[in-house]
Length: 127
Image (cartoon, rainbow, N blue to C red; front, side):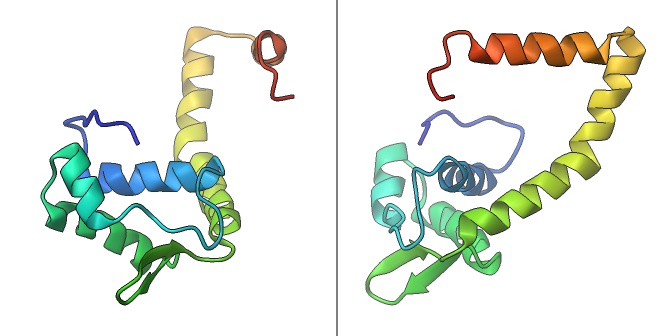
């Protein structure tokens, strides 16, 4: 996790978002344990209640399960559910802004897509 926090969102929300990113990127998989509240709090100099609040959001969303005395673990299917939710959020919230910006700037969408595909392939060994 990145130790830099922004002033845009509460830290507990940023922590939640970072764990979500780790699940989406495959860093944390089904059944994997989240770093302990105590370790995260100590490593990033956070109040343990802040860490717990971020983790609790993940529990409330059904992405993570608390196992008393053992810690928190990623639920089976969490990544798939996140992909569905994040795709829907992007299409509903972000995409209209992107389209509006493209239109406002008079950009050519075909050229943007072509440029994006060619730049993704350059130096990207993940394909």
